[in-house]
Image (cartoon, rainbow, N blue to C red; front, top):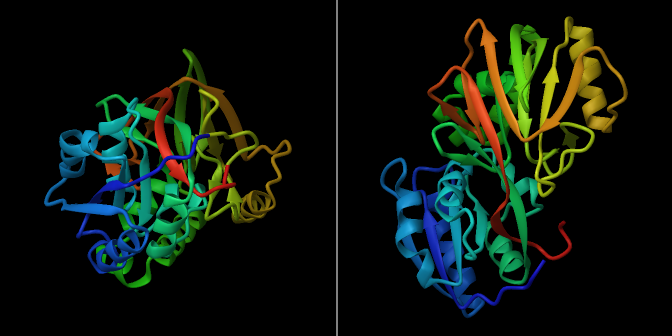
Length: 299
């Protein structure tokens, strides 16, 4: 890891995110207090954050996203392989990547922590349409949770809206047949959820998704969960809370570099909290492609 001196920052804000517009004033004041010149650009449509990062990032010491995980995805797509570091200011609903990196949920505190932080190189997952994700892509409970959570609920309740929808989806035990091809080898499962994960930590480490999920090892991890009863689901939830990954017929883990996931019946898919148009997932790891600002001592 290396320390980066930031004197000029590009701030890309998504005003449509849960707290993007409301947090902008606090963010700019935090940059000013630190003596950093922060130039702000607001997004107006899907894909705009990527366009702004491509057009202007080279003129700055760092790029900061002020929005949700979708904004982070776009900027990381633009800057993968670049030397320009990305700082994540959490202003969305889930803020999965920021939480996994132990970035404060308060935007002013996040600015302070990242300006005084260091850089970390992390892997990315690349989808077949070229887009990338940092946290995880999946099918099943996680995608159903996103599909069933309204914009109004996200604005009003934040991450709690996801927790409620996710719990409801988990307890329905809606299963599907999964054909997961990992590094060319097919595997068949009955599943209620399957995630190709880059980070293992959820909600700041409260839950872990698998036994050896690391964001900088050049690998991704397939985590398959297949509870057959409410008792199974409760047991799995308790084991994930306790980070207990001993043998269990309702959870399976595979590591690799390429993944192709197909389901019967067809199910909606997601990556880093964004619903995807396709009904299958094809993912390839891009080792250490993202350079992120993180608080000191967080990795």
